[in-house]
Length: 466
Image 1 (cartoon, rainbow, N blue to C red):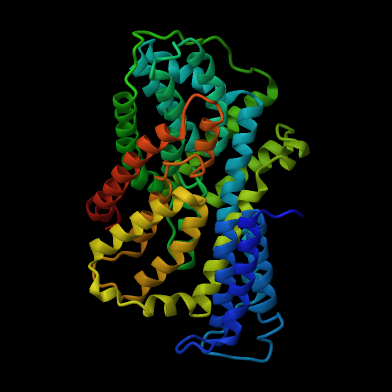
Image 2 (image 1 turned 90 degrees about the horizontal axis):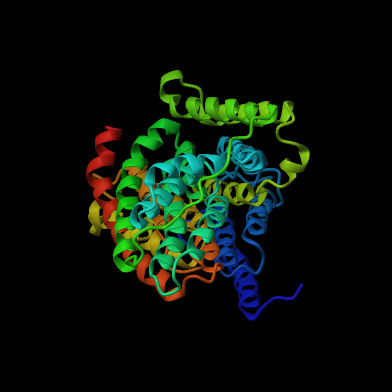
């Protein structure tokens, strides 16, 4: 395996970060907490500098926690502390946690939708009312992309929608800024739309997983009530921003709306499964069946009927599930060993107001997500924020659910660089836009996103949650 200089540095720093805490004696931190601190350092460095793929680091985190922190591991078999390490089942069980099952159901639905062209046909139908005016075509593309990315992978949605807009771009004059606006509207809408549902993007799963560890369940429909109004506002702002920055010269653009729904038996089975699953997810607060249980409907129904085959199952993005599982596992060890509480207690949080803390977490999440995976950002920040909220030292107004939402949502507002999100990278690969175009629009989107998150955290979310 050939490592770049950056990866080699990451490997060395990660291993040093893992080992050094074993030889320290930090006041107020348990022995298990020292071990957890080493694993945290290794995970943070490996996720940031990527000497190995980030999903591989997540699996390594789970493995190290089993070996070094579980009661069945090497160190704590005979030791009982104030903070007792977990059984290995707590760590390895994250690979099949309800959040993982929820995402698995979403992946199966999305894969089947692509296989039977449901996504393309929905795009065709949803775009038809927007006519041929450039500004409305951009709006239609953003709405369709946001809707699809709420239930599909942002990356898959962007890849599919790029095939839709490339023929449109080809019909536009080379010097028309509309080409840039069209290329940017897809990744921006995919990033924003993923916020709307629990399965829309991995940071949402990190939030829900962290809250579930605290005994707090956010139903699918309640998440949508919390997130969708914000998504609508930010999406409309992105639309206006792109049309302002990249004002179209053309008066009209022809869009090909030809096509038809697949009417095969398997496709009809998919339509039924898709409709029932989404309906049950949205109405969870009425019938009380958990989202993860509902997510098994498409997994079971579509595999039993042969709509999704074993070849399709093999092609699912399992690495995303491993990444999320590693984040949940890291949060468990930080909480159970007292590491998160120690980190929170080492800072004079009481000198900050609740509003300032929310703003800081939001800004830090956006800044980190521009350079790191948004999932990694949420994974690193949320355990600390949750510990801060539960400790009570942040003062009145620092709500556990709200601060988690702030970080999870803010992590999806990073759209400044090609490396910020896979949708951004896909858009850059078209050759239609330059990094400067994305940075200019993405920077503005980040500022607006932070302001909106702050406003919703102060006014709208407390209203809904109370």
